[in-house]
Amino acid sequence: MSATVSTALTIAANSTLREFERAIKNPFLKSLFHGIVISALLDYQNNPTDIIPHLRFGQTTYSFNPQTATALFTGFIKLGQVIQCAALDFNPYATNTPLPITIPHDKFISIAMPAPLISLALAAPHRNPLLAEYSSIKEVFHNIRTLQHAYHYYIQWTARAITKSIEQGLGSKWNFGAYFGIPQEEFLLHVRSRPLPIKPLTSLRYDGHAVDNSMAMILHPTHSSVAIRAANIYEGRIPTDDGLPIVAGKNEDNIHFYSDFLHLFI
Figure 1 (cartoon, rainbow, N blue to C red):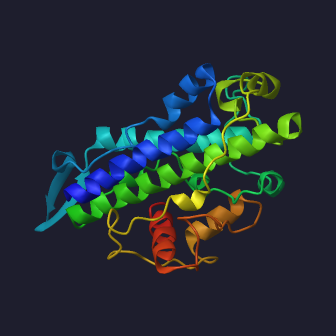
Figure 2 (cartoon, rainbow, N blue to C red):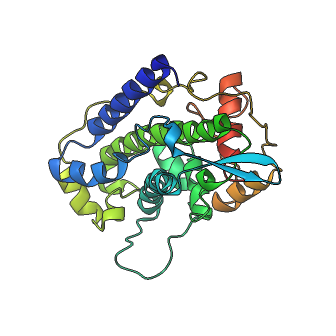
C-alpha cells in the first residue's frame, strides 16, 4: 500500500474519533464508548504478514490471518450492537434473550437518520467475511478496506444519532446507554452538557484510492439475497443511506461502495 494512502487513512481515523468525541464529552461515557470505537479496525494498515496462501489442486487462494480477522470484525459487530441496543432500548445484561435484529422504521424517522446497513452483519454475526478465501491478495485487502470505511462511516453515523437523541431529551426514542446497561434517564444525566455541533456525514467520502473498485459487483437493489435480508431487518423496507458513502444511485463511487459492502455479506 502506498505511503499516501496509509497517511490518508491515519488522518481519517483521527478525524473520525474527533467527530465521535464531539457527541460524547462526559469522561465516564467517553471511556465506555472508547472501548467500542477504538478497535483494531479503526486504523488497521495493510500488513502482508497477515496474508495466508493456500494451494489446492494447483490453484492458489489467499485468506486473512484468522486472529486479526476476528479482532477486526468484532469491532464492527460491537458497533452494530450499540446501534441496535440503542434503537430498541435493549439492555443485554437484563435478559437472556438474543438481541432482536428488527428496528421499527419510526425510530429512524424520529431522528431524521437513514437506516444503517451495519445491522446486516448482525443477521449472521458468526459469518466473518474476512475469513473467506479469495483469488488474490488485492481482493483480501480490498474487502478489509471496504469494511473499515463502513466502520468509520457508522462511527460518525452513531455520533450524529447520539447528538440528535440528546437534543430530544426524554422524548427521544433512542437510548445510547442501553448497550452498557444504562437507563435513558441516567445516560441523559451524564450528557446533560450540550454537545458541540457535528459535521454532516457527507464529510466522510468514499475513498476510491484506499479501496480499489476494479472487483466491484453491482447487486440488484431489491432482489438480491442481501437486499431481501435487509428488508426482513427493516420492516420490509430496503434501506438506502442518504448520507455518504453508502447510497445507491447517486454517483459512481457510492454505487461501488454500496455494492462492495453488501457483497461482503452475501
